Image (cartoon, rainbow, N blue to C red; front, top):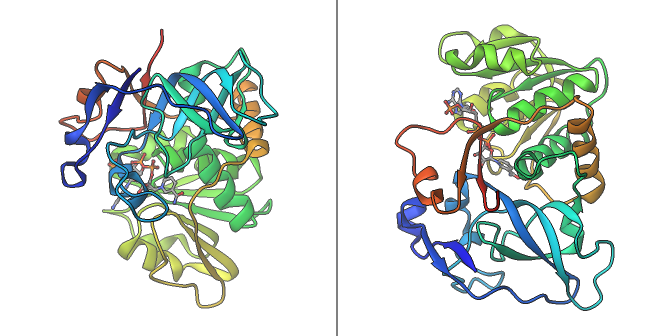
Length: 305
Ligand SMILES: NC(=O)c1ccc[n+]([C@@H]2O[C@H](COP(=O)([O-])OP(=O)(O)OC[C@H]3O[C@@H](n4cnc5c(N)ncnc54)[C@H](OP(=O)(O)O)[C@@H]3O)[C@@H](O)[C@H]2O)c1
């Protein structure tokens, strides 16, 4: 099969190569999926799991990409819950070869059905940003209707999902980001917007939940805005600051078939819009994932027409 591989951590995405690789075998509980579209998060090149296996051994050449939408072509021993020929989307294991390839071996529990009226490109854009937003807001942030959410990077891949899901749950959303992203954040449902370079973040007053995708000084300043009993949720590493009277939680997104299905259902009925920036073919993927300008929105590699 054709696949993108990386072998050199220092080179990052610049070290990506399109090569021939053996088709992956199906292990116990695995599903082989013919990948139609793959989602890519540039920070993957900084994750240890891209380079090492669970025992810390070199696992290069590794195939990046952890989001997929495609069609099941084979099942491993004992696999239940999905069928050959079924359309699926999912989140691939961080420590295994990923989805920038014509085929991927993935555990069935990491997949959810992709209804026929949701395009593969849209499906591949949902697992990481959708599940991260869902888990941060509802599992870790315990968001309730009537609460306020500070949604950092509100025009980004995770931030647009945070904004829409929190708004649907009855929260008041203060989006943040760069000046140029104001209209996009408002279009995705933010009630107001803070330009982090030019507005005073402290002017927003107290919030019940701050959803951090930036870290550093922005995270520290956000912690001090959390109301008593509120939560700082961050997805960019261990928190460097804690609310005086609240929780600080960092987490890495996990697969969840039920939550993925909830997210897909919202896309089908128009409650959730995805934020796709670049779409390219596998042959053009190395160039597309090494842009000269910063990419906006999710990058999707379309492997089949
Ligand atoms: N732990 C997890 O499970 C998990 C899951 C998903 C994502 N993440 C992490 O979360 C982060 C965001 O992911 P994403 O896919 O949403 O990225 P993204 O699409 O690039 O969104 C980030 C947004 O924040 C903005 N931003 C970043 N720094 C800023 C600053 N200093 N001031 C103003 N705006 C700023 C970006 O603007 P510009 O594009 O102009 O910089 C962009 O709009 C990444 O670091 C990613 O690795 C973690």
